[in-house]
Every structure is written in C-alpha cells, then in structure tokens.
Image 1 (spheres, rainbow, N blue to C red):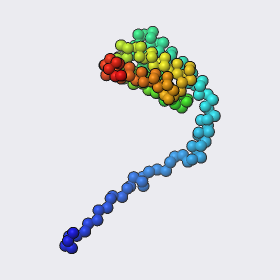
Image 2: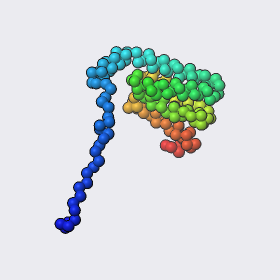
Image 3: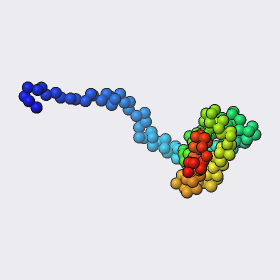
Image 4: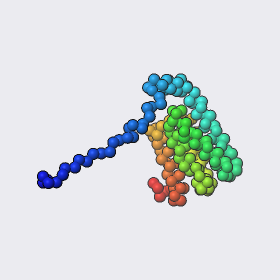
Length: 169
C-alpha cells in the first residue's frame, strides 16, 4: 500500500438483537419445580396413554362404519394429533412418531381422499400404536419399534407419492 492511499477500517454493525432479547420467563428454580410436578404426575402417564389409545380405536371404528368418510377420518386425525403431541410426554415417543406418520397420512382433505383408497394403512398405524402401547415398546430404538415405524413411513410415502411401496424400499 502506498502512503498516498488512505487506510479504511471496516467495522461490523452493532449486534442489536442481543439488546432486544427478553430475559427468560422462568428461572432455573421454576423449571425444577415444573419438572418435579411432572415427575409426580408420571404415575398417571400409562393410564392417560391408555385413554388416548382407546380414543383413537373408537375413532377408527367410527371411520370403518362409514367407509372412512371425510368427517370420521378428520376425527382420526384429531386423535392422532393428540397422541403425536402427548406420546413423548407420556413416555411413549414411538407412539408420537407413529401418530405423526398417521397425521401425515390424513392431515388434509386431499390426503384423506388418498387414505380412503387404502384404509389398511390407516388401520396399520392405529394397530401399531395399540400394539406398541400393549407391549410396552416405547422407543424407536426397540428393534420391533424401529421396523414398524419404517414400514409405516414407507407406506405413507408411497401413498403420498402415488408409488408402489416396493419402489421405496
């Protein structure tokens, strides 16, 4: 650089995001109390999960009775969505994953129309949730849970993409 050229200093703009972040709503003690309360409630998790399994089985029975009509499949979706949200909390993360797959299968009217053509896939999801709960298979690390989830996801992907399941593996 020659002496005639002026030196310029480049500075990064000030990070104002840090100034705008609100302090956390809960302190460590509040979180510890919440976790302790959840631990006390955990003795109820199995019975609450049993109720969710019964609800989705009843929704499936209603769907079967109507030939898997739109409103009944929407009710199946609502039950699956609840399990998707609660399964891991109730210490059944595999049920959460299976219910998530079922939600994907029936979450929109177009998806429900495709599912009407293959109600066996809807049934397989619900049966998998029921069987996992009954057998105490709680995680995808369990070999049966892993295989079950993989098979269901392949079926949903095939139906969603309008492909034979054998094409997906």
